[in-house]
Image (cartoon, rainbow, N blue to C red; front, side, top):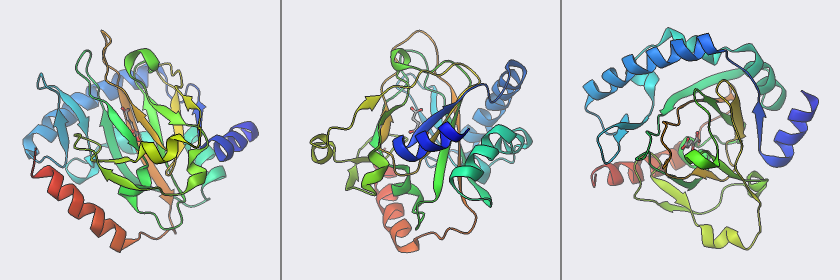
Length: 244
Ligand SMILES: O=C(O)CCC(=O)C(=O)O
């Protein structure tokens, strides 16, 4: 635990092993099927994006259109909460649920980005937890991190024109800084916890199996939202959504 806290503060991310078991994974896959149908019913581009072969690539802001008891239970996982309390605050708030379903062969990439560009948490006391329901690694386009890049704070972001992650960081500007790119190797049931300002992304899933994860984002309950920045981002998002 102590090592994980040190590594999170230094590198911006950690892997927590075996946070859920096979039975829970199986039950969450069933929940995903229900939520996929609910997302499609909304017909709202804010909530889901499709691959070129019309499979669901990502689902966003799930709590806004479906109240899932299973996701709520997952967000209270003791191993995850204990860790978050040691790196964020004793007072933790669940802010969002998302699915990254990245289908075999056509799962889309997420360009390098900082989550806090979308979340706008004023004191940056927030983290994303990506729970693996399948293995996730370099071979199936798994998440990569620029190790330690959260220490830069927020950098310039620009429109990415990519579904699911509408903004990306200006890679040219940060390349000089020589951050090491790390591809964590996750087994089903493990999770990643990353700082809301670490630069990260993922590649296309060109493998034969789906790469599936549930992302739950948390913040310090007392942290304020920067509403003027949020408004700016919303404007950019709406402009992009009109083009797809
Ligand atoms: O799983 C992916 O492809 C990207 C996930 C991601 O960017 C995130 O959870 O913040």
